[in-house]
Amino acid sequence: MIGEEVPSDQYYWAPLAQHERGSLASLDSLRKGGPPPPNWRQPELPEVIAMLGFRLDAVKSNAAAYLQHLCYRNDKVKTDVRKLKGIPVLVGLLDHPKKEVHLGACGALKNISFGRDQDNKIAIKNCDGVPALVRLLRKARDVDLTEVITGTLWNLSSHDSIKMEIVDHALHALTDEVIIPHSGWEREPNEDCKPRHIEWESVLTNTAGCLRNVSSERSEARRKLRECDGLVDALIFIVQAEIGQKDSDSKLVENCVCLLRNLSYQVHREIPQAERYQEAPPNVANNTGPHAASCFGAKKGKGKKPTEDPANDTVDFPKRTSPARGYELLFQPEVVRIYISLLKESKTPAILEASAGAIQNLCAGRWTYGRYIRSALRQEKALSAIADLLTSEHERVVKAASGALRNLAVDARNKELIGKHAIPNLVKNLPGGQQSSSQNFSEDTVVSILNTINEVIAENLEAAKKLRETQGIEKLVLINKSGNRSEKEVRAAALVLQTIWGYKELRKPLEKEGWKKSDFQVNLNNASRSQSSHSYDDSTLPLIDRNQKSDNNYSTLNERGDHNRTLDRSGNLGEMEPLKGTPLMQDEGQESLEEELDVLVLDEEGDQVSPPTMQKI
Image 1 (cartoon, rainbow, N blue to C red):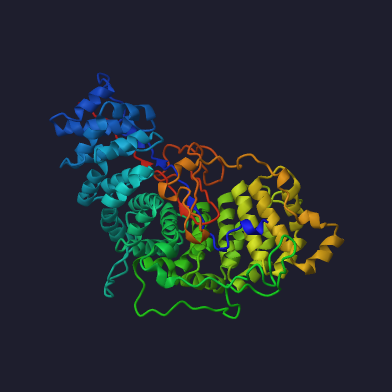
Image 2: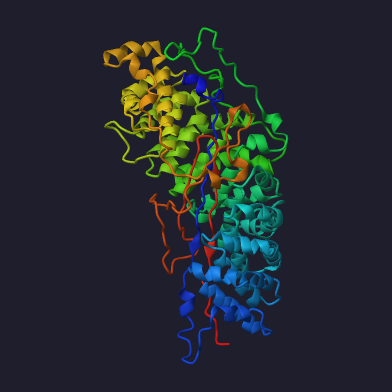
């Protein structure tokens, strides 16, 4: 029976969002010096690398700056620099006392570390490049040097094997030297001083992007980030400040919200003393009782699910004797309001997806704050904002909204409201039928929508009626019997059909419309046995998450996409080359990928710098 194959737990987490390659800066500075003198000979690459060790500092700085120029958007030169042993020399120059030398060396490393050749990143790591960058960061006092350092760390953080290296060596330096001092947040606000504001936004963007990447690696990394003193507080302050300045679509907001979303991943399990927030599972009717499940004999009651008390339409957060600090802020009303504001105000798909994914995470699991947050989102009128995302033209936003609604529907009152207002758009996003979305959603998204529908109509007769009124039966039967849908889609559709047939009140109306009992039976013989429609490679998963099965039938399986394809902000697959003259942090693309359970934001690369030309030596 289909029903017996479904995990008993009704909570689901959203997955890790996928990584994004960063940006390339303008080459305008190369034109400032004009053409070189006619007798100037362009040095060969081995000569330039040899000049890095010359006794004169001016030669070193010019050689490093020229390498920075040569490596700009040139993967072959980057590889040649590595093969010619230039990377250890550049890393060594990071400790040089003169700024023009260590700035040029860091700029060259930033360009070398950008791109798909992962060997360059590994080479920087293997010669202790991360500790060297951290030492330089602690000495930096100006924005341009700090920006190059943090951009290099952002580039390096997109490689799995370097993430924990950054967490162990760079986390506290990035927090203490960049995030906290430039965020405007103060540990002990002085009432006599004017409010502080965000400064060095590009540096904050790089740093948040770096931490966003490393937070997708493993639970140990997320634990260290959550418990890093002041980090969560400053991140929330930054996003609140940006929203207050009507700048809810900046890259800084995106990186901060994606990082907060990652830190909310299984937060009710990974925080210290998590057991104090756990709640007892609801009483589930056993299979021998009056509501015993069968393919077509399940007796569906008209009442509410016992998971939440429908009488508790208002649930207030616990009263605190002192303000929340650190990781506790991740599940307090202030962060929930941030996500709601972004859902209503932002136009950026990645921010909308991250906000909905964070809500999905916080509403997952049987824990005290999950119950509070499900109720709070209803009180704050956020259910409609999430339901509106189902009409987005960006698939990853639709899927994130579907996952959030699925977890929100565990609350009985939420289930009623979602059934009334979201079922039409959920049905519209299913394949087939006249009222169909113009998008051709992937298997994972279709399965997520079907599972959300099933959660909403279970123990909710009115929602089941709404499904019937909006051509839902036609689409479900088509998925079940068409023969061109995957097995996962057929099983998910069959489960919804079984739930509908379980309502005796609907059987006669359905039979009058021409439907038969056989239409509501699973039809796996016609299901496609081919691989699922996506082409994601499980071998690129973070090691801790790969095929991991935890207790209570929670799954943390997350899949990364094909790294040769990216999804830009318009939602189109393909490479998006930045134009010369565009500002730093222009996206090269983003791809977001979710399994149906929990959501994390995966990696993105940082930005390359535009180097000055090498002067005549």
